[in-house]
Image (tube, rainbow, N blue to C red; front, top):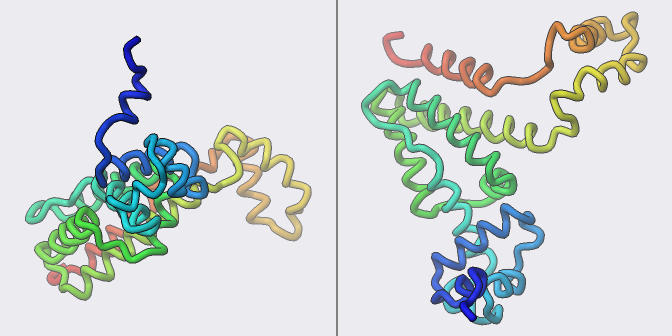
Length: 221
């Protein structure tokens, strides 16, 4: 009888690239809490000790899968329109991080110096510096953009309600925000309840505000 696809997958030669690829899939499917050397060995069809021939430890795996995520983000071009490049970069980063829900916290809590991450940062600084920003201002600029990308992504991933629930949730909470005590919060909630405002926050809105502010800092502007 021919081996099943899963058996064929398990029989592939072990390598660091394969270990990290399977670890990335496992993190996407079940989260980082389930990512252990033992579980990874089971997924690969080997004993956990066999993994140490290819990765040093779990931290090595975490660094590796973060770098795989960074490799998916569109790199900004150098020498073109810096604003368009930064807009595409930020939008791509947000999309990639939504695809890998565990990755944002890992990125902001570790020193990530894998080759893909280094290329990503190098291209970003190069784009901004070539556009006329000093190195110091380029550093401020890309960190401000990334702080927005990470914060918006984490909020979207963890917000307890779906957009289609906003009106009903607002209606349920309305008695706790009486107009005489919270006139503006009450007024906004009523707009959501009445369908005059959907309450959905747009990624591009905040990003444009940041890029508009950065444009004013360029020499000669």
